[in-house]
Image 1: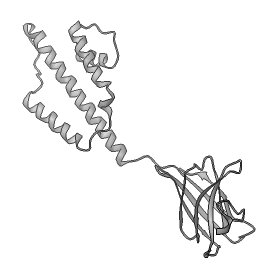
Image 2: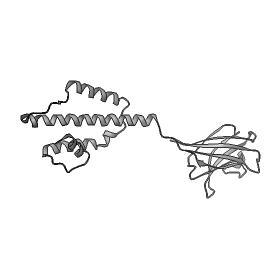
Image 3: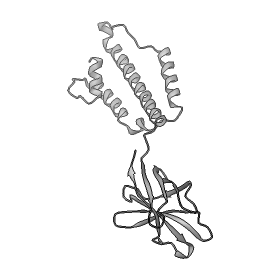
Length: 221
């Protein structure tokens, strides 16, 4: 059987005619290629080790290039395609390593939401910007606003995310809004409205309802 036919069989084409021994060997090789462990994330040093092993094997036992004579056909044919198949597996491993490291070094763009936040009748001169970035730990919120005084001595600000049903999720407390980092465990896609309220320690954990900033987030990336 020609090499391209063997490759086609490994790719799933079962129409080729094979003798039982050759079919068994190709099935074993195909089984190795479909093993999930082959495509698992490689160790950082795997690429270098594979290249070294392939290079050493190639220098020690080169693949024969001469056409076999009739008497040696069965004896020489198998080592040649096995070498080609092994080379193909090594190339596939190297390709998987390259893709893995390529994706790691060029991560996909992060999901981000943003909004302009405006002052309410309680703070008509206030305004600001907010961004929400998805991370493995949750949504990192960066809030910057102006036009609001600092609050201390049991008085503070608190930010909330709200859904369409009016359910509030607290995302953090702070004293001033110049440069605030908050965290949320809910997604802005489900809780798109961000509000900031004036709070007192005596108010307890619920919202005071005294909203000074409000904005509706939208996806930017």
